[in-house]
Length: 341
Ligand code: AMP
Ligand code: MG
Image: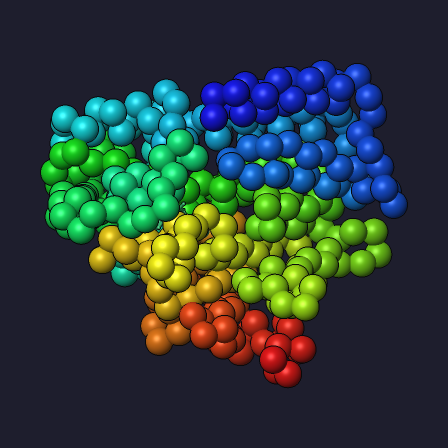
């Protein structure tokens, strides 16, 4: 693992050096840059001209956000989690305050289905780090203990310079919303630099501004169980200021005795949420879309409409555990070929 990280870091440094010296690759008047951050390949594409210095700023912002929100290493969140191992109250650095407040509201809006207070459960399941990877579920007594001990972000107090939790040890994991927040921040950075037409693709999760030349940006939603070479569930045009995020049980999982155990946990049971294969949400805020996709996955088909309404989401799409599609009218209007599926 260490070697992989060192290898990746070396590649990043080399790639960075190359990017500093060469003009950005341009295809059909779209300038691209790719980097590895927040656990995924991120592609920033800008239609028209962009100063290399602005691209460099966007890249640096992503690297900085990754360190800030990672549960591993010794960035801001990791240090806060260390304090919360033994103390119920910890100073919240200015870099984390807005993200914590936004996530607490999203936790409440989702009825606790999106809850960064699942940190210890995620760790117990081994989904926080490749080094912790498991091939069987954790023992039931350990799961029950972690479930009883956990502090929900919904119930935590943010003042805003301090966070106070119910009980220790507590651990927050922002894996379900930090990518969305980072995408919003980078889009804002590009806009502040006068860029009006761009798309950020963070491993299939997307936000766009403006258009691609004369056309709207067009994106595909991944099929959770590709069959006969069909890798896309649907495709749609994404318009100025829209984000579209998907949570899927295919991203991180192991199979034991024919059961797929994946990384999206139901905070109420401590177990992977079993009612869905993938959940997609469209919203103007990438942070809300990210959290809501996770919440929709946990909600499953039965609660989908009410939870999405509570979260202020009009356009959503869910593939349930049997592979059946459920979608809001607003999403169906965006994807006419859904009707035939
Ligand atoms: P996503 O792919 O956006 O659905 O985020 C999944 C990641 O968020 C997991 O890898 C965990 O780190 C964390 N996570 C898992 N379940 C939840 C949940 N119910 N609420 C908040 N975060 C979660
Ligand atoms: Mg999410």
